[in-house]
Length: 244
Image 1 (cartoon, rainbow, N blue to C red):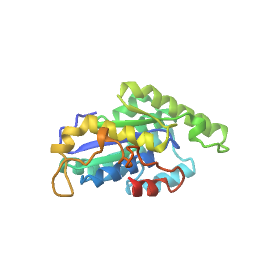
Image 2 (image 1 turned 120 degrees about the horizontal axis):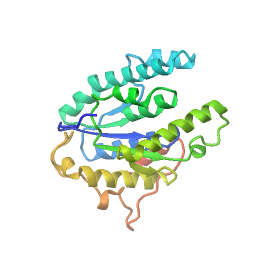
Image 3 (image 1 turned 90 degrees about the vertical axis):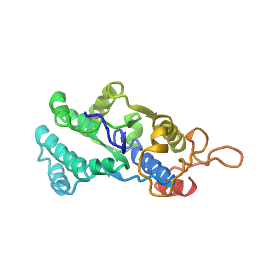
Image 4 (image 1 turned 45 degrees about the vertical axis):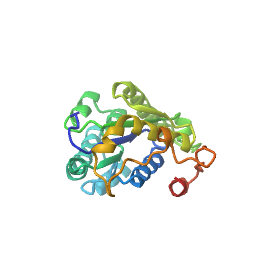
């Protein structure tokens, strides 16, 4: 991957389905926007160029490992060239759910060559921060009754992520912890790694001023100094956004 030499920065979240990464990147994006930063989002399989084709092909099992990889690469290329890269060049702080690493894990798990898959993304920008949400597969599946082949696929995807964690310098988050604790760790990492850039570099959507972080980058504290609790459940994002 290529180093990011632009004013804007890229934060990525990765993990198997059910790891909670969607909730956490939504909360982090909301927090950063509350500080006045321009924070657009990008999601896996969100390119309108291939989204419908991918959904039909995947539902009907029409893809080979190679054609699946090429579909993923097309989706990524369109997102990168038409959305992510222009925003980073403009100075935005882009938050992406699923990046090239998702293809590295999923495509290899489906049977594609690891070296070949990675070669498809050598033009991609290297993220400034990548969070990997580590969770046992049994917890990620949430007790659902899943067939053996799907379980085996998820296991292979998980193995690929684990193999990449050290190589790609992921910031590993224990996804079995509370939503609040995971978010606290993300915010602290953002402050530690991007603090100076946030103060002086990236695009803001409001008049100047330093980022409004509470001590150590934690969620806003209660009057007694304890962070406000964030409930679990389907409405966790909306409720947490309200209290944070």
